[in-house]
Image 1 (tube, one colour):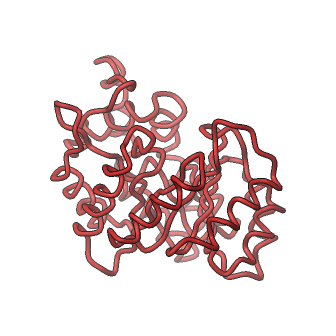
Image 2: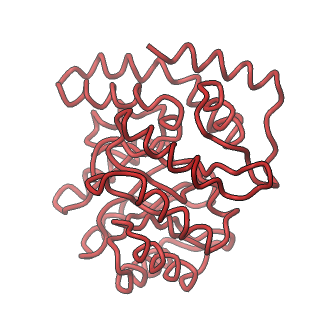
Length: 290
């Protein structure tokens, strides 16, 4: 996998059920808009609010919706190894190409424990494993030296780094340079800078809303036009901040609805944003578009 990955939101209907038709429509739209691969059942998918069966069904819907050459990286991580491996098996059965495994959360774990856990997951997983470091949600970041050691495992294929720490990202890239290890940035605000630092691509929440802008930055970087890529990235900074750090998934879905995209509703305990915030987000979307 490389390039632009979209961590798809999960649309819910008025009764709070997964809207699979809307999900398929969204998967098709972002692919047509320039996504290189899709990432269902991650943080922006409200995955922790889905049942195990719903997760598997979401993955299957996404796999079926897009051409076979579009890889699907399915989020399968949970706090415990049994739940993670069960979800990974289900994702494999649903047709996913790889598993995105978040650092175990809720309890505190040191780097040695995290390394051992990932090795156990990778040993047993039927899919290639991508590490997922998102300290804002999980409360822990994978240390670059831990990643360096894990990158030598034959079934650890890469990592999504959502820490937003560009210096640590650069260290991780340096330490894994000799391995076949794909490193993706998960923070849209530093997408272009991370590409400059050697990222293989990005898995960006904001690309649910403006995938064409993220694809433009990717293409400009690939063409050697790094300053132009950074200019495009700057156009989405305020929108990216609003749909991640400021308003989260409810804000992300509201921004999508301002473009009439099939975002659906949020699942409790999330609540929709108010009309004033929705209007603010609509302005930010307009500002980010070409």
